[in-house]
Amino acid sequence: MHKIDPTKLIVRVMKKEDIDPIVDIDARVFGEERPDYYKRKCALALDESYQIVVSQVAEYEDQVIGFVMANVYVGEFGIPEPTASIDTIGVHPDYQGQGIGEELIKQFIANMKKMQVEYIYGLVDWNDWDMLRFLEKSGFTPSKDLKLEKKLA
Image 1: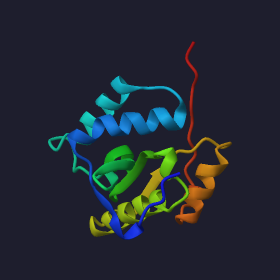
Image 2 (image 1 turned 90 degrees about the horizontal axis):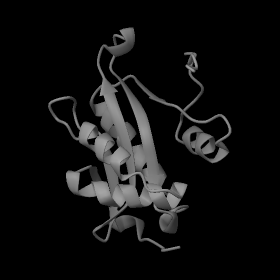
Image 3 (image 1 turned 30 degrees about the vertical axis):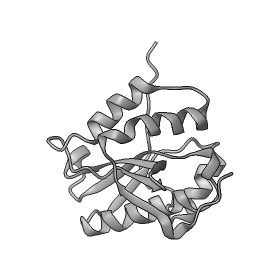
Image 4 (image 1 turned 135 degrees about the horizontal axis):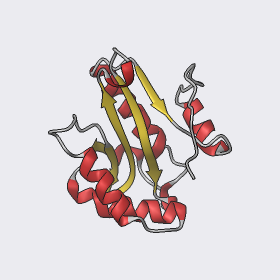
């Protein structure tokens, strides 16, 4: 583990140059590289003609060590108030356990408040206890909405 000085951690808006470090972090966390997936995902997240760029990275000593990818919706899905959804969050394994994810979420929430977003949503695997604890610690609670699915053959 690399110990960081939290006063030198920078949380900033994601840029196109951040795609490769994001792919690397994801591969280290989940054990497989998904560059095409993240290139598509990042292209969409960075498309200013489609949406306001709200995805962020955590940078330490000029190295991206964490990220949060998110979207803001105004009027989609029949919900009249502005909402946001967290799509993906990741912290490089060498830097986990030092508050980087918490800082990313804290800054993201502050940015959403400035944009007058009323709700932030996220989907979590019911058995992902670490992520559930992390989000609970950040103030998230179970939603009143019910996700429905239909499996297609």
